[in-house]
Each structure stands twice: as structure tokens, then as C-alpha cells.
Length: 490
Image (cartoon, rainbow, N blue to C red; front, top):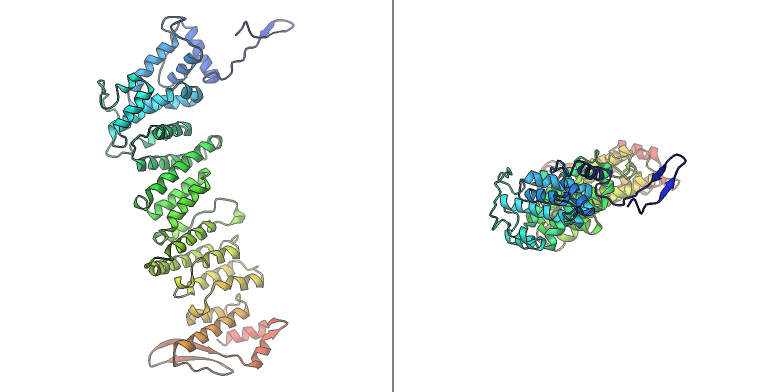
């Protein structure tokens, strides 16, 4: 390389510049090889540097052809011991592969270490099938095939504290980069390893959750490997969707969605998860629905769009079910609570509020008092709404399903447009006329009447005379002073 390099002359001395592209491990790898060469072929090899040294030896063709006990032979012997050694050594070697991943993957080292890890896992749990690992081992080398779990004459003692769970290896593997984990998944898929897919799915969820918890310290790493993390998230989502309702509760699915959504989940995977959650939404709680928006503050504090999509799935799924009525009622109560919780959000638009309230059919609520309470909180929290907005937000109310007490509160509420108040009282009165034979309409006046004998609730009868209607009109609307005196009389 020196002979072939270009020589540049300086006034005082010659400068020889040598550029070595893609040297394994960069400057650190070159320094390790230099130490080996200048120390008569001796160097301390351990699990923290053997992967780098091995790749350097292959890259530089440091074989026995040039000298006895060259670097390639030394690292190959060390790795042979690692492959059948302790679990922790295998994981540390995989960790070291991250520094030279391109070369380690090209030279087959990553595959061999991953197989060794799978072998350890199969020995200490029932996650993998030994027969499938044997076929994979034979594809790597005959030597490794002879030492699969079924016929390993050098059976390694269990140095792993596996406990009673198939998930003992999760924490150790979370220390590895997404490129290593992706390679593991590709190996399992390529060789059709008989793995219990649910265990792999749980591992991926655990892996991504752990990375998310340390996101503040590894933001650069997450951005650099954004595509790889996205692939892992999609793989986990497919596993969850495949397992379905039998393996995951509604609350767990909400947790899964929150975790995976942080890693650029594909549209297909997101729709699949949302469909699964929507189909069992009756099991959800208020806490489940209160998912932070995660975007700019201008879009609102909670992810209201997600709840609207879930409700659409739920309603569509219940259209042909016999038991849908009971579930609809439960969801109706839940959404009323949700409306009251999100109403104080200063960035919640009227259209979003209506989107949630109107996602359910009218039959989902026996009473619309809960919806009115949400509207009341919203109006108090948004004092600068235009009259048009205050009128618009009331369109989701079914006045005939308001109790008399709530109807009176609505009529007294100064935030409610006058025409809405009158319409609500009128609808309530008409509803009472159709529902009871005891109703007597008080003509050209307002009256409250109790049924003492049967202890029926208060019934408000309202009929507006032509004269009063003229007084309520002013410049195309209702005169507020007249409306205030009307409310005081209720």
C-alpha cells in the first residue's frame, strides 16, 4: 500500500498518505492490529475485542500462510471456545460485533454467535425446537451441526440462571443493537425455526420498551437506527395481531400501541392494532383512553383522533351482534366520562369534541345528561367561543333524553345560546306529552307540576304564545335581557 500510495513532497520532508477504506473497527481496530504486529504476534484477546480482531484478521488475510500462529488462527480458536462457552460471553461477543457489524455479518460471525445464543436459550427453556436449530447449524458448518443440543458431547454446564420462565434472556439481549436483533429475527424466519412466536413477540415488546425508557440518553442512536427500530416495531405488531385477543387484554393492547407508536409504526400495523383494540373496546377504562397526543401542543393534550377511530371500529363490529346493546350502553357511559375529562383542554376543537360525542349511535345512551355535563365544562373552559361554536357544540344533544333537572340547568346556563335552551325545553315538553297521560299543557305560560300520588319527577310544560315569541326576537336573534328573565323564572 505504501508503494502504491502517492507521495507528496513538502519543503522539509516527504509526506506519505495512506487511506484504508472500511477498516474493521476504524482507528481502534487498526491500533489493535498494530499492537499485535509490534508485540511479536502476542495480544490479550477477550470477549470485548475478539470480534473486532477476528474481522481485522480476515480483512488483512492474516493467515498461517504468512506466519505461524497468526491473528486469524488465534481469534478463531478463541471464538470456538466462546461459541460453546457461557451465555454472558456470547452476549458480550455479540455486543462487540456492533463496532464491526458490516464485516462481522459478511464473514458469518454474527450468524454463528446468534446460533450459539439460540442454543443456550433452547437448553434453558422451551422456546425453541432443537431439531430446527440442528438444520440451521448444518447450514453454517458441519462442526457446529455436530454440537447441537441433541448431540453435543461437550455439553456445557448451565451457567445461566434461567429461573422458571422462558423470558430469562430478555434483559441481556436488550443491551444489543437493533441490527443484531433484526438479524436474529431474519435467521429465525429464514430457517423456519420452530419458535413459540408469542415469546419472540414479548421479547420484542420488552426490547422496544427498554429502549424507549432510555430514549433521553440514546436519542442519537435511535435516530440513526430509525428504520431498524421501525422494522422491529412492525414485527412485534404482527406478532401481537396474530396472537390476538387470546393472548392480550384490552389494557395490554393499549400499552402495546403506546410503545410501538413511538417507533414509526407502519400504517398497516397501526390499523391492525387499532382494529384489534376497537373490537374489544368495552373492556377499556378511562385511563386506557387518555393517551397523550405526543405531537405539538396546538393539536391538544390527548390523542382524540385515536379514540374516534377506535369507536368507529367498535360500532361497526357491533352492528350485527345480538349482545351489542349492553356493550353499547357501557361504552356510552365510558365516552361520557371521557368527554368530561378532555373538555378542559384549551386546544380541543369543537369538531373534535363532536367527533367523539357523535361516534356512538343515539341508542348507546339512555340519558344524555353526561354529554351535557361535558358541554358545560367545555363552554366554561373556552369562554371565547363564538355564538356559532356554542350553538354547534350542542348539536350532539338529544333533548328528549335529558332529565328534567338537567334540562332546567341547561335553560339557566348563560353559556347556552337562547334558541338552544328554548328548543331543549320545547322538546322535553313534547316528549312528556307523548309519554304520560297526566300532562296538561299550560297555555301561554310556564308552569311546574308535581304528581303527588305517584311521586313522578318534576315535569316542565312550555308553550310560547305569539306575543311572547315576538318579544324574544330581536334583530334576528333572541334578546338577552328577555331570555335572562325567562331563565330566572325557571
